[in-house]
Amino acid sequence: MTRSSNVLLVEGSDDLHFLLHLLYCHGFQRAEPAAPERYAIERTGPDDRIELKYKEGYDNLARTIRMELTPTHLGRLAAIVDADSDPRARWDSLSAALRRAGYTSLPDSLGADGLIVKEQGRPIVGVWLMPDNTRSGYIEHFVASMIDPSDRLWARAQECVDRIPEEDRRYAATYSQKAKVHTWLAWQEYPGTRMAQAVVRNYLDVNCVAAGTFLRWFESWLAT
Amino acid sequence: MNRDSERGALLVDQLEIQNFRIYEHLLFERFGRANLIVGRNNTGKTSLLEALRIFASMASPYVLWDIISSRDEIAQAFGRAVARKADQYGLMNLYSRSSDREAYLLIRTRSRALKVEFAWYREISEGEQGYRIEKVLDPPEDDLVDLRAILEVRDAESVIRRVFLNRRYVRSRSEPLGSESECVYVSSGGVSATEIARLWDKVTLTPLEAEVTSSLAMIYPGLERISLAAGEDERTRIARAKLSDSDYPVPLKSLGEGVNRIFGIVLGLVSARNGLLLIDEVENGIHYSVQPQLWRFLIETSQRLNVQVFATTHSSDAIRAFTWASSNSGRTDGTLTRLEERNGRIEVHQFDGSDLHIALTEAIEVR
Image 1 (cartoon, each protein chain N blue to C red):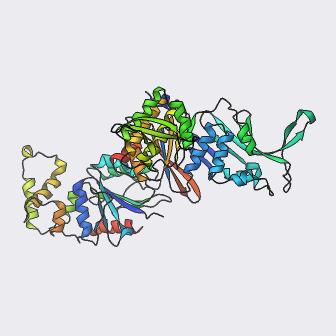
Image 2: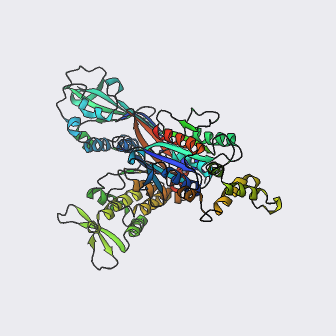
Image 3: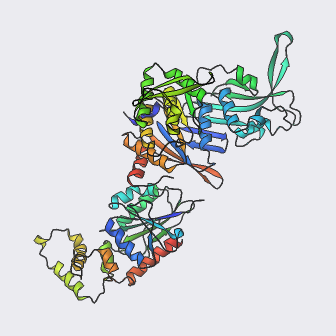
């Protein structure tokens, strides 16, 4: 009997590295990937080994998740995606993709604790919408919630981005949180630090409430 | 070309198998031009090829004989001492349920059906005229000595042939019905020397000969020509190759197991025109680096010669090679069929060309 495997799908490579380092802080370590360009982690050994894949955006993830769920040795699959402007619409779209893969017991909406679906004869599926399953937003909102609220530089970064006149902004209004987080990251000890490195360099609180909720979902997905 | 018309040309567009080997009832919803069958041991990969052989040959006695003997079931099947009815010559191994009433197998595509049913017949002497045979519907449990085990082969309408289960019959009476399809079977061990010689004789001095040579050259650069000549014992014929860097022919076997296996497969393909090519454990003896080219050749050539290809494999290299070749051929009519055992039942999972394309680009292993 081949050991069952676990796969974690994310949208982009930044998301992947951020989550990778967040999980390193919680007892996981690098495992040997199936191919040199892939990523894998494990905590105690091959049994909790997880393969991480980034899918170059949500649309591709939703289009291909049906095939991702087909390998016979697959035990669990989790998808961590951005809610973007409408968490409800994002879940409608992702749940439709999961229904095409044969899942029938999907709820109409997601709770704040994320979702774990267990159906007879199918891989266990976990779903988490960044930042917290209920609000609109993306991974930078989640990262922002890991910044110490009393951090003066964070207040300054937000204020600074907010003060940019409309005509000088090159990003869409919905991206303002990205602008703020990356501005804050640009002003660290090592300017231009990426989200993943911000975890490694302790700029972010990996034990904050938001991270705790996320990790509880992740642990229970892995334990189901 | 639209997909439906392309599919319409396929001999086996869809396949339903009932009561055969480990399949109680299995439906393969779609097959394409080139089809790879994957699954663990004992999920019935070889049985699928057997069903296709029976189907294409309209249950020819030769094919039935070969199938039964290849699984070492021949002693049982053709032995004389049959005491219990339940044994029924070991042919019951062909069937998934083997009660008397259900001793039949059914193989069906969209346009054609074939039923092979086990029956007991009695010989009744007609004096000078010889004898006639008569079906015995309810034979006694312990006395089958005078009875003959017969396989009745039916199409949708009627019995098209009766296969007598003894050696003599298989040897002497297997006149073609005319409705058989060409079907070449490459077993996991490869094509036998005798079969190679038979296939080669059909191909040599025809335009297909160049096809065979050039496809081998693709895998073994420098190979210029092939010829079959008598071996040491005069009865066997040995394939020899002319290489560009040598003035003397070398035995094809000396070029490695892979070249021989591919020779068998390629000969099989060009001989199976308008029919089926079946390859058991396609990866055997073939280096993984050559497999993508082999599949590309099979996919392109099978299209041209109107051959439908079915191959089984255990190997992830073979799956990758097939996925790569079928999604790069610009066609979407390759399928990958996965057989899985779940709770004692065999389940079928089929992937079409667009599924395989996703598997390839997203590095998903369809196993």
